[in-house]
Image 1 (cartoon, helix red, strand yellow):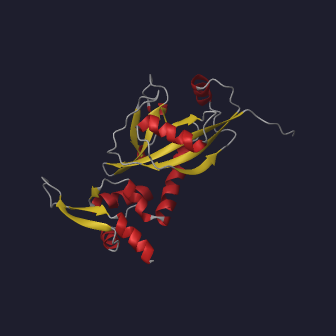
Image 2: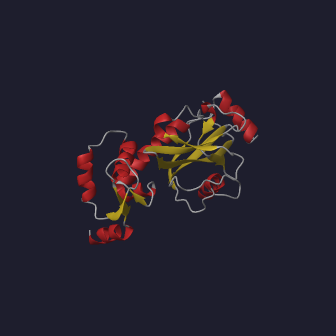
Length: 238
């Protein structure tokens, strides 16, 4: 078979994780604002402009969707399957949104961790954004479900290399129960709470505060914080 070159476009897609109500969530947008069904949801993304590199494009997309200018981004994989954009509804949307004759769409995927208490200030044409629990993600267009799945695996590898990454998802002061639920959500399995308390007690960078929960019917839980200086000192000593 004779090889031939094709008309290829490059896009970026962003998987933004957040933690809220003891659930791991991802940020999704509605690709057609006039429609409201679950199949209308997609990952935030865009074709790159002619003056941009992919890092700049990813930063632009997240700023337009969140209003946050300095959100940490990690590029984790390129998705380039020839059939990733061959569903009729996806091809129709591409033609409407961008209009060029796209034979192949290659996307560079980015990963970001965001505190959900950040107020999202959408400035793009995608006015509708929502946090969707990772356990209830609907069928998404293109290969976005695969991108989400692989990004979760990347988060797990990230944590193995640097365990403090999880604190990017927690509020500045948190309870051990929140940290426990976050680990269970990330690894998608039950974790024995007693063993988990022992592991946390061995982390000198998880510091107990004097403050406890207020106005609760059960025993008030203590708040903790992540001490970055203590972690850096531990790394230096090692």
